[in-house]
Image 1: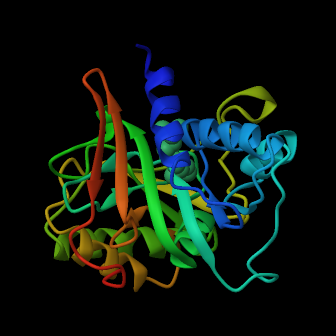
Image 2 (image 1 turned 30 degrees about the horizontal axis):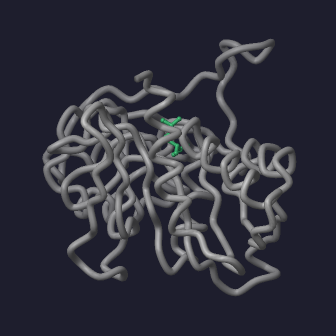
Length: 243
Ligand SMILES: O=C[C@H](O)[C@H](O)[C@H](O)COP(=O)(O)O
């Protein structure tokens, strides 16, 4: 089975949790895109749901698939968010933001009663950090922000190269990647993050950091699709112990 088929399987399993009338957070990325497409098929068959997209890309996909959309200004909570991840550890701490949507993804996840993470099982890791940690920053004063990030890394016992993300593809190739919120992303190659909650807290305290890709305490469960089938891992701690 290809990686893409595994992603679709995980998306299909998460779709079983969707009920008529739900207000849904719609994630971003190649796995979340499968979910939106499958949701669109259910909507065409009569399912009534409304979604809040976590990126302009997901907005376009949802519109194409006929999924009705709203905003967090128009509704006061979400029942369920389904989103992908770049890494998932056994505590269901996540690294997200490989596609640059971490800020809206975290706002939507925080507004949601439950979050199901969907992924192929290559995303399951014993310790976060092999995937470069995305940190969304304000371009103004970036030098100072980078120095503050380095200090936070040292205090949390990690270190590694940082690079401002470049756009890929089309005529934007080589230019700085700009998020949907108009910010930049610094990717940090940390290798091994031994204290994800501590690092999340330290990064959140830096003024030039808009958001970071550590999602601590957000995921209620993870649906992992692999060669041997689908595994559903439930979170042990209650939602609320999040950064
Ligand atoms: O910013 C992007 C998101 O956090 C994605 O959910 C994450 O990068 C996983 O994407 P994919 O499903 O394409 O691996």
